[in-house]
Image (tube, rainbow, N blue to C red; front, side, top):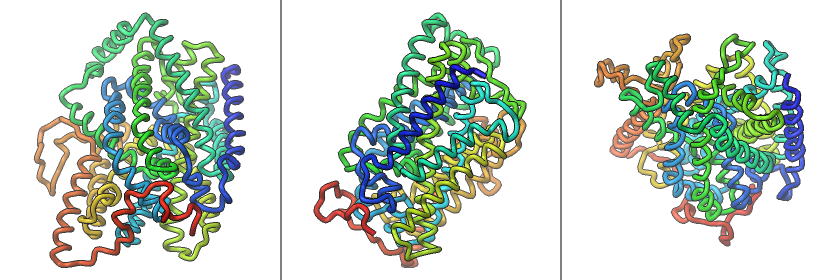
Length: 542
């Protein structure tokens, strides 16, 4: 047991726990018994709060642990996260402004709320809600993977339920203050998390290369490793360049379709706040690029992953924690571990709130209790957030964590299938509601079939082993258009293309048959309203 690191970790964890409870009275509205207040922080976060909230939401503990771990094991392919975040913000800049405005005008809390209003279809809204919940659950579980990697490095590495006990305690504390304070808790804690992360990463990328002989030595060590392994990992090869590009593009298209990302945007005070944040958030991409290079630093430092006592397998997610433990003094390693641990709690809280909002608004209220009051909605969301959190803990307790990581890749493929109904619908209703439903079923079904056919890289699983598909395996009703090709592609893009093609085809047929396309409750000027407009719906109104 590394006591110095553990004590500092616990102290900083205690600080954010206090902040989590104090947050209930921070920027408080009239009551927390309304989704506008509990689930969206009163829709009044300014530029700084939104910066830390969305940054804490997107750049998670999993990011800080897994991206450099992927660089450590796979080389250049792990760097896809950098172009992905570079192209992300120009793509979503204008759509997010429209989403904020129409949601503020109508009191929408979730993406499925918008779809329900745009198309008047409870079925399509249900599909979007279920998709969001299913895609978010493994994402929450992955925050626990990052937190467990830190705990394991500090010496808490038992097998069975005892080994998971500190994780359970952490999530009980998280569950209690999220239940009480709602979105205000992760918003306030995100300040601490981001400050710690910036300090740790800046120190790491300056101090560690100096200690290890400079970046030339680091890249030489990485090149030697991948040359020996004959994987060409320092540079992309002919087989994974298309995968790299499509994975970056698909990830960029998917990120702000996740309900937790939308939640951070809808909590903003106005359009100008979003504009400032979408212009400034790319600064995180610089941090992410430096962070990814720590995977190569770990190679040069001769880091070896810790064996997970529960599975008997090396846990590659411990690469960065072990690097910090080996190269930093104990007190600073404790601060670094706290940064990663708190970096797990912030997004996990936001994700559970977003999933709870979907359940409450688009399933519970739509199908079980149409006359639910705002207070009953808030109560239901609080309870659902607890269920979601402990459902994520169950992923870790009963499923191999490595499989959980693969599930997150599957989650990206899943959430991409909501793009036509959510993102495209922000601009046009040309796609027919039955076209969107048919496209969703085809994209989701084909995506799952393709994912099922992919074995894991280590050969231990024959199915759902990743998201990279060899073009040779791409089959259209038995026809293999790329037979013999070993070039790989991201399954999410393939499934999305199928989704869009079917949506367009069914739309043309439906329009020819003059099929009813639902009622649009939105108006063109709803997509441009801003905070302060005279006719704007009051926050907290039923």
